[in-house]
Length: 168
Image (cartoon, rainbow, N blue to C red; front, top):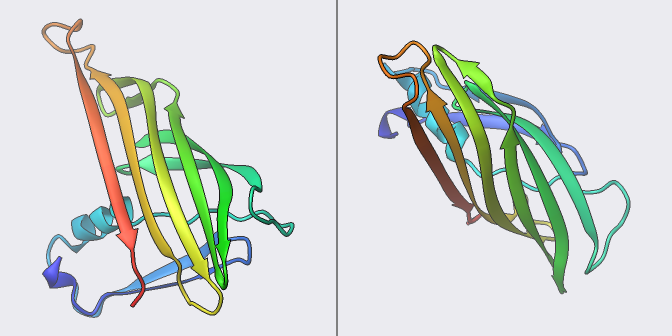
């Protein structure tokens, strides 16, 4: 990742937390920069989507996100959010995510049994440009190759992603 020095990521976020267009700029792109940017995109934690109406402590809502894991596997993430604390200028939101996906083909493999779960905690402070955020997500799936020598064999994959953002 050191080769990405000078990388800038810019974008806008709506008042409810929905991401808008994101631009990435790197003046002198090294070899394999795309792979490194993909790693950043996979590991960078996403923020909660906020409801459009005002909420207080105890408020609960749900957000559904269609995502693409490793630019190949279509998954759905359903996250239940709750405002758990309000202390002076800070608000804390906790989230619990469930991952699912339909059976699908990726290259020559058949992917099935897509499941997963995760948690997040985000603290917004009035006037801060970015919240404190930590999250983890684990996704499992089974891959089998019907063209293999033994098509009954399959491989179970587990992908664990965790990250945190602490503004300084």
